[in-house]
Image 1 (tube, rainbow, N blue to C red):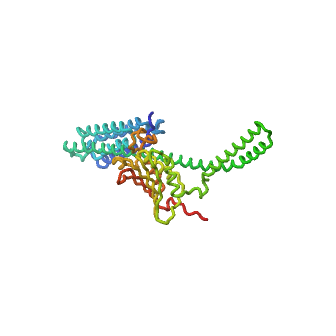
Image 2 (cartoon, rainbow, N blue to C red):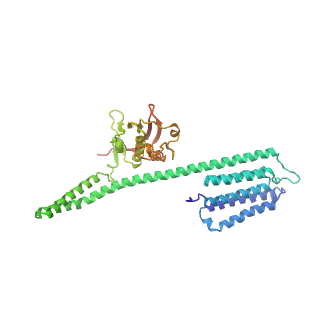
Image 3 (cartoon, rainbow, N blue to C red):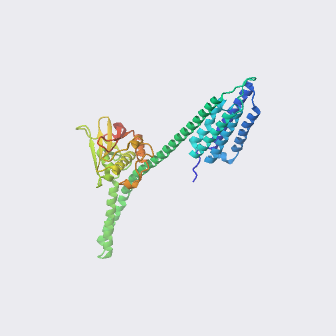
Length: 428
């Protein structure tokens, strides 16, 4: 399926108007201002063709939408040919404005697939080669002839080739990286929104439990009265069954009510030990790997409470999941605190990060997972896990570090200033 174009047709039209205005201005300065003789009728005809095409496109329905990749490529190819023809008439590579041949290819590199970029780059190089071999003379003072040696023109040609190649490659790589980061950030936003919805769902369940408590109590009382007054038989049995089921519903709702109400400050906070235990909870009972959570701090100083933030919980749980996939026998999650900082470290005894992965960790689509076969959780890595975790943690003010331990294994550390995530003491 064809992807939507990145370039609006209106943008291409406006850029072409600027280029044509610049070309016309340069021709007027050379012919009227400097009075250089030259083939100005042919030059203005080339500019006129560009004006005619731009007006034609501007009045077509295509001008009101984004251009398809092939449409944008065709328009940029026309720009290369139009500029190449104008340069050919005015000195070729000896014309100082020959470097503008780089612009359409650079724009293609920033917005089009590589096959179009390659085709446009080759077209620009072919135009530069034609301008090098046998262009018309550069407009110059009457009675004088300006001519560069062939070897110098060849040097200018190769300089243009290098400029076209570098600009196209640089623009394409930068645009591709930006697109990858944008996609990964969209995934991050989706994950965070899901975590926030889950948190809101817990608050909704608590509210529902509170509201349903009274009618269930009424049902239980009425059912008991029915059971006492009903004669022996199926009706009394059904009445006591109704009492039992009502009690069961009340027990379920009581457990749901333990989930905090969103607006209750007492339930929006958690101890540091509770935080690390919640992070390792999905793997606490795993038999393949021992997962341990520890909290350490200055002697005699109580551990701080933290605000319950879904993005931090999701990010640290994701890091523990990755450690569980690669650990041999043990994962240690250590929370340390002092007067200034709170630090959470996830350490495993696995093979550690490979050097080429370690240098890029935290970037999107960097992974060492070959597939679900080598994963305890069955998770197929796309290289977004660490990127999402790092992005979420850094948005909360954390500094995230990835490294290998001295005795092997991977170590991931997140460090916050205490004032960033610490919940103040509860007033009594």
